[in-house]
Amino acid sequence: MPDSQTPWSASYRLIAAEKWKAKSAAMGAPLTEALMEFAQPRPGMQVLDLATGTGEPAISLAQRVGPEGHVSGVDLSADLLPIAAKRAQQRGLANLSFHQGDAHALPFPGNSFDLATCRFGVMFFADVDKALGELGRVLRPGARACFVAWGPFEQPYWQSTMGVVLKHAGEPAILPGGQDPFRFAQAGSLARALRKAGFRETSEETKAVPWNWPGGPEELWDYARSVSVPFRAMLDRVPAEKWPEIEEEVHAALREHGGNDGVHFNALVVMASGTK
Image (cartoon, rainbow, N blue to C red; front, side, top):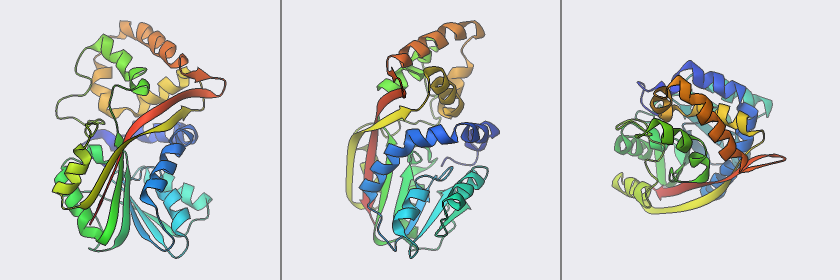
């Protein structure tokens, strides 16, 4: 959930979310399951899901806390929340609500939640210390905050896509000071941020999670280009005449991970938690 000046609420994010929602949901399902196992939501819990986007993992959380619990999903982009609400409605979930809000100033009173989750959002907080401090404010004593962030850029999924572009475009892949998906890729860095914000009993691990696209390589590359906002500056500086060669290389790299039922990777992610 980046600050309000970043382009995550731009219309192309909404278009990409609609176009690829079924296949991106399938791709992210194992990651959601890994987060559920890590966070251990229990029936009756009040849960906060930060950077909820189009509704996961909030929907999975709501299914686990049951009718006596409740999940509040928050995202800075108001455009994405109707998609999330529709998905929840289709599943008949009445214990789930979505709110437009900023992680740095959450729209909830203190001591409201038993658990917090955030999947691929913490890397984009404009002020991590402030956002984690605000999260601590709304958690009840003893509540856990559980995060998933990207591991290193040097892994097959990224090297088969943006890594190919980088060879042609030259450094940097991410602009200095810009949104960085790999902000917490260094071992221990997210746990340190949690401790700095006052969380205790912190833990962190790097985990390999299935990251499978149920379609062809060309389609996966179309999706990756559509949603990879932090790489926008790199993509934009590629001369038009280079794109045919780049796309051929990307498709070839992705085919090395392809099968009859899609393109298959193991995503290296960082999973970290802390207790208030």
